[in-house]
Amino acid sequence: MNNNLNGLPFNFSKYPCRVYPASVNKLNGDGWAFIAEKNGEDMLIVMGSKAVEYQGKHFQNAGFSCIEAPLNSANAQILRQHFTFTAPVPVLRKDRSFGLGDRLGIAGEGHLQAMVEYDAYPVLAQQSSRELNLTQRSYVDVLDAASWAVFRHGYRRGFGADGDHLKKPEEVEYVLSLGFTMITLDCSEYIRNDVDDMSMEQVAKECVLTDEMRQRYLGQSFNVGDEIAITFCEDSLRRCILIYKKAIEFAAEIFKVHISDKTDQVDFEVSIDETATPTLPKQHYFVANELVHRGVKIATVAPRFCGEFQKGVDYIGDVKQFDAEMKVHAAIARHFGYKLSIHSGSDKFSVFPSIGKNAKGRFHVKTAGTSWLVAMQVVAEADPVLYRQVHKHALERFRDATKYYRVTTDIANLPDVDTLEDKSLPELFMLNDVRQLIHITYGFILTDKDDKGNFLFRDQLYVLWNKNRELYAQRLKEHIGRHLKLLYNQ
Image (cartoon, rainbow, N blue to C red; front, side):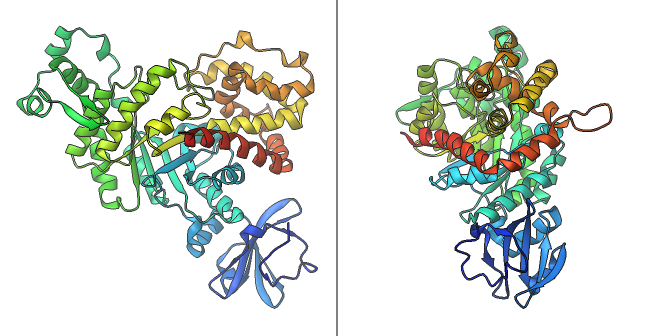
């Protein structure tokens, strides 16, 4: 690991350690900084006058004042000031971007290894409040993990930081104060799910069309390109208003108060995908048109597509129907000048070619839980005894986990892990029911404790992952790379 250190003036005989070569950086011409592994732990070594700005243990080496600095939050803040490539930037304005949620804070190396082969820009720091609550982590932890990964890997192209699925103004304000460069506003609490079941008479009674709305939408054909036209009748317009009016007003207010003066620093995504029914193309057009009419600058919109985008498994539904509707959704996005955002994009291999083709190479795809699944597959591969224990605990906690996630898992289909040979355990992750079982129980696996207050699995798992870092990174590179390859296969 210590090869090709670009002339680093460090005496390793006096300070034995293993350096990550890609992390070696000159610091303002007055020193150096790099990450090294010592006694099984990574730390930042800073040489020169800037060393005093970091927390840690001071020492002398090769005539330099040095510091052995832990990879903590205080030091990450200084790192982002000294090396601007470790701070997030807005990336959704690039043609291709890819969200890479990391529930563990250790997936950065594998994520970056996958990304360097493509021109998509990564959103390395991407987490929802729900995920953070379930894993007992914070937005600070998420951002810091991304910064350290970028520095260790020497990745300089730029990465984004997404406050994912935020629902409250105070959440938006908080993540912006930390330096996050993307807000995904979850409008689901303002979207009505009962309108599709209402009769035309009920809809007409509840929604009286104003002259302004009639003039804006009725009796017109809206050409969005690709020979695609959007039209509205009175009933479809009324339903759009009833379903989305409050969500549009919510998004417009959040933009006005928290983002409008930061559009050069922050990408704004509007998520309308957490609904009971798919977003029809004309509904997508209506939402976008109303937001633009209110002066909202949108980077992406996340519709609810036809079929099922369930966690950790391939697309469930009619691929031909998806392809036909994706063509229209993508045309609408181009018409208004933003990108489509594909939520729950993990493992949707059967529709990735359609997304890449119809979006004409401009997309934002979000993944999160799939990296956790790869981590657990590494556990099954490296420590079958530990995996069996975790798997059984997941079964016990499955019903509790379904309060947070909608899945169609049938645990009756799951094989008994005690009857399987060790070598067969990693193959469990080829089964949808196993993937969803492990996918949604991550919070309980990571945070449940015994009667003495000790974590049941968390500490053991992190020790295992640390010992198998290269294996995890390789598996992640392969798995995320499969996503990207299909998205680029237009």
